[in-house]
Length: 359
Ligand code: PMV
Image (cartoon, rainbow, N blue to C red; front, top):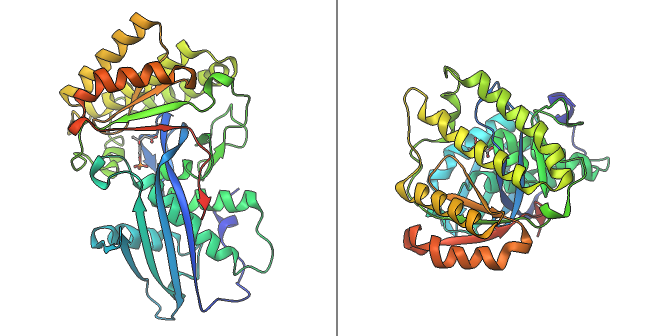
């Protein structure tokens, strides 16, 4: 596939008005994407679990209007959210060539998240993927020829990527690869694909509890963070390391090797943060509570021979990952021992899921 394949043929008919609504979840990377080039193209391949409970619901209401400009308003939980609009405008500008109807409508974008907006959880993945699904769904109704399910998902992922890189991994589930990788057939820099190889029972319905350590504004935006990889002294080794880790994960996922899974996932999280510790300017995104939680997880794992582990995004919150058959034991541990390290004792239980859904 190339970018050109996402440019549609002229539409047969444009509707006067309509509404389309989608739910889309967040995702959590096991092998991290950090560093990009060109137009939102990743410097290395990544893989993630699509989540279930942390999701964005977006309703796109459209009205025919030939103003020849982008015409839209964004509402979060029913209130106009001007703060989101520059990002959406940039997104519309980027994707216009692939959705040439955009300037012929005015849009009302109504969005809400299942998780608190201030929780520090990346809402860009769920938000951008939900909006991308709404737009491709709208386009589908204007096409003469039937759009296959496969093309729908590819185009939604392709557009979501142009909004926020990791958003392209939220369209489907439960394991998604984004970025061309020599050992993963069909993998592409342009969009996410469903992980195409056998996955052991151990990794079905994998659990993720998100511990809300820091609910403030992000200290480093992901745009700034990705850009820091351009002049980074360890960049090339990091990209190589990520690709090697993905290669190793293949047999781990097939054999159900949980201890090796833990090694790769935790090393990926710490390597991501190591990139920020060693960039110029440098950042420490972990908080004291992040480290306390990590140490408690390690002690618990050793004592109970458990298979829980942690991963991190570009922030202080901790994702606790564990197999479904350890759910009761690990959740008790989280409630009793880890919740004290969370802001207001807050955490969110989630698990791997199937991706975006039309409502
Ligand atoms: O999608 P972005 O540009 O916000 O980048 C997110 C990158 C990480 O969440 C830190 C890692 C990942 O692969 O999701």
